[in-house]
Length: 126
Image 1: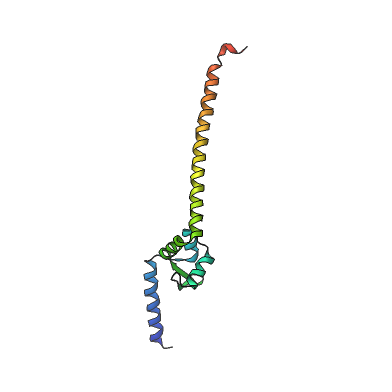
Image 2: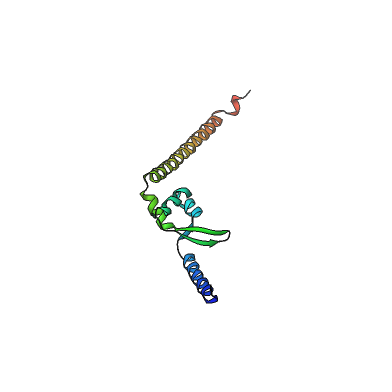
């Protein structure tokens, strides 16, 4: 390979890296963390051309990047992931309702204890 070819390849790599920095392309790990899609599913999706991907040089060697918007759109189409998100939202709502109920019960117990102390007067004690 000639020196000019190396320089051209390096320029193309730099241009691609600068475009990727300004886009929503993320690593598989970040896509998994942000969308809840397993890395195995992401690999299946890009191998089946259901989502785009590209291989770039990372700090520890080549790494695969996928566009976060495409992953999110594909995830919304998945009935399994939709059910998972609905369960998660349902669980969060249940926890919130239970926390409110606990707060109400603690307030009632505090009011009853206060009333009980007020009912006991100094004359009731021997």
